[in-house]
Length: 215
Image 1 (cartoon, rainbow, N blue to C red):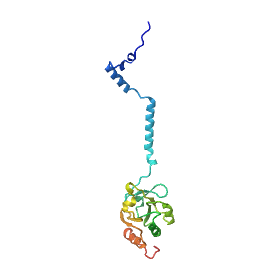
Image 2 (image 1 turned 90 degrees about the vertical axis):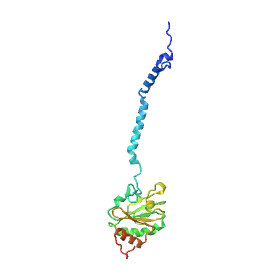
Image 3 (image 1 turned 120 degrees about the vertical axis):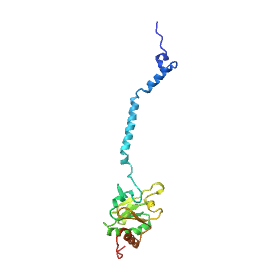
Image 4 (image 1 turned 60 degrees about the vertical axis):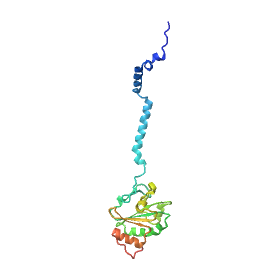
């Protein structure tokens, strides 16, 4: 006599709702079963990619910047790297902010360029191109200050760049005077005249500039 085929319940007795204890053991066994290899491989691949992103993140991201007035770190205007106030210390430092659209800057830069050449090795002059809508580097070359350390200002929340941290307004240009240790001494709003620059250098840098020069 042919044997009767077993029912679904008979083939999988642990799934039977008439045996709660067996059902619980079945569910526990399924939870402890090994994961499919394909899914495990996918998880490992995702983890590897995540680790790769973490390891390479510093190389792919922008250089660290700071708009703190006494510890600024800004990207170079031309090329890679940064301009750091810490690297300029050792001599008094004069930091001028300029932009190609700024008419007052164009009147001031020849004065700064001339004095910076004559005080080279005694006072460090640096430039920060701020709120630029044109070619700041071309402007620097045209006025002969492209040998200065030149940086590009960066804006954070609510335009809080170095320019605004030094002088909470929109006046351009401004010029900041630091001592040899990087301590901020004075910020001059607006364009410097020859006499004003001479007086500021004498007061804040301890450097005398002769009045009968071509300033």
